Image 1 (spheres, rainbow, N blue to C red):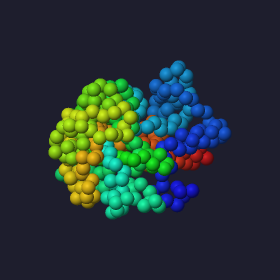
Image 2 (cartoon, rainbow, N blue to C red):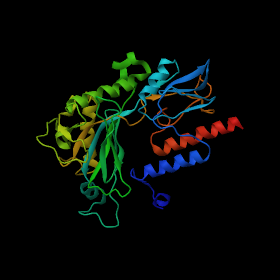
Image 3 (cartoon, rainbow, N blue to C red):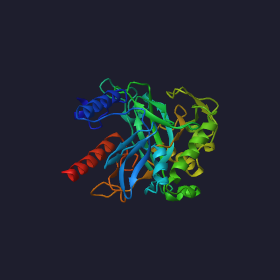
Image 4 (cartoon, rainbow, N blue to C red):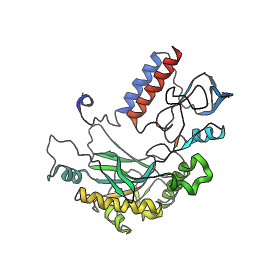
Length: 341
């Protein structure tokens, strides 16, 4: 009921598996099939038309229309498209860190009171500053939430955050990221449209090394981070694999690191008390959106060259979260339905 009336509705990561299961059953009831543990390894092309897909287990699925709706970390699919000469484009994203505060501290700042009242929810925050002509902003803020490991390949560390439906944990976390542009990926230009992917990898692999070559995340207390000081000790954190004291300039490119330092100071001017050593910074936050865009026609939603191929959702570069990805999926499905009718 709350999601029907709240200005900022929150289902809760703990509730999503049931919702996804219900979606799956609805698909099956309408004649669809679900194939688990089935990795797509190739697209079948006939000239400039797609005719199906092949999978790792040797199966071939024939179809005149293929919706490519992978997530933003499906690097194997990006590489496949590049190998097959199917146009993809570099897409700038945002990269930074994840910061965790005591939820009670965020509540006191946002509600201007010592203790949050019984009828008030754990407070979120949303903040944006301009630092040296770049946006530095909060991303995927999780009141009463948890920082989680989200690496998708060996030898890398990636952080993300989530909250349960009740947002009942004692900590608040948020990605704090710096806006990037094409110039930032020039050191990786040899990788063409996958330059931003390689940029991500370089940071994630440095974090893996700095964390001790395991899922331990490199971290600093927040005030220490802004002063460029190694933290003598670290507070408890919700990040289950644990954290390791590291000067995060060992992990982050200097232009990101410096802007984050200044950004946190600017945040504190708007949210007095935000900049504190009670908070801890974990690196890195690199998967804010897709590092590529798969170009498509604005009206038909088909790939600009491959007929029958429909790039869709976050991985294709047309969404930035659960809701926007769902809306994009609906648009693509509608376009195909109109074409078929």
